Image (cartoon, rainbow, N blue to C red; front, side):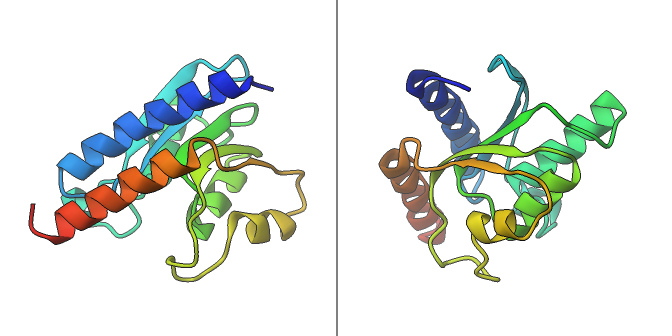
Length: 155
């Protein structure tokens, strides 16, 4: 698929998106839709506060934008790259759009509710799903924690 260097480059681009979210007071999550060659097709970040929408995760924003722009419900052949392990909602939504390869930074831990890991979602789908976790895991975790602490402290 991609070299380690390519995967790190893509996750760093997700971190750039996450930075935009964090600076806006949002949760610091970013996502990319890439093609099989590694070219970025679309990018997005979390906008839950801006949109007053608890579902406006980076991945959901990305999937909605990509499908609408491309006039399709299938993103088959594309890869979802995120700075953190996608939650169960985002994993399920991506699989419904026929994305079956996921590259991500830090694991979500058990802070999300419901506490359903990407592996658990993968294990309960009929499709072959590839997970490539822990790309720049420490850097991505630190970035998310920094913005979580900064934004919860009021700025």
